[in-house]
Image (tube, rainbow, N blue to C red; front, side, top):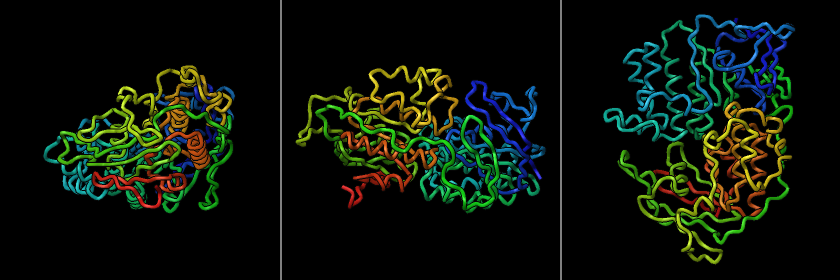
Length: 480
């Protein structure tokens, strides 16, 4: 049986030390979940299991009892196994321009037969990737045209199908870091069902905060406790885990936020359509909406339906092919003296890819760049960011990156804020933090627009919900 040996790992920047004090026996096949709050080192240990140290995961790896810290080569024995990875951010893992080439490339490398590759291509239609499948003979769609959810689905499905069709008797080890963070509930459930099928012939390590989704498929949990020294321990009772452990972000860091002065009270969309040359039909067609200050609005729909595209168009990053955005006063009158050039004074956005917000080498520099801040730096501890000023923002876990990006956005004095998947990669305590941030923003008369697949989250907060289906934006009754 494979085993994780006792080890200690120190990050080079002195951020933290991860210690495994005892040998951990692993199943030969099955699902092993790495559990713990955001930022405690789960992804770091997953990298060590993958064998990314020391080339790509820098630090000192040694035996805990060895005072000399003599370097270890690996934390476990995994000889003779095929290894497959899916990282947190799908953007960092795509190497081809074409989604179809991206999909079949791992299968070709694994020498999967043409017949099985053809079957895998057919499965694209079952996982909400019909437009990728329909592009099989034209090859006009590029990866840049896919949403974050579509990219994650494409990579995950390709990985799982490659493992499924490997020759009988071969042993695969799969590493999945937040593999369903950008997926809608239907496709998330389908992916875990597929993971449940292939775990009979593979050892699968997975990090996922969506406990209800993953629990039925987990065979072993490795628990991380937080603090300066992280200890690994086993928990075989799959239903006794609390949602978060140890130190976590405070749930209510903002006692008050200032109201932003602006004559604009509402953003109103009139008959908006968005169409790209490579798409036969509009992404969004004849859509009407109203986003009001003092309200929280959600835009929901399947991944790839066009939610993020619509948000980018509203923000002025993509042109409307039809219609216009109207700015209205508190009396409901159109304001003529605001042009698209003024939109950055009215709206800020938390993008899906948190790294889009980072401009400097260290977190300290990111914080210092924020002039005339709204939030006091003493609240950094509530965001789980205190004491990390010397670290690079790009070295943080995805959950920490998300909270740093949120901190940056909250310090921008705009009356409207758009949040694209604000809860992905967050443990329950961090989601509670984000929920309270939204409540305080609403009290401060900000207009909040959320794009999310987290139904519990948005339904607990929202005054208004729009669902995007087949290019049509439909307002749900009972929320306006």
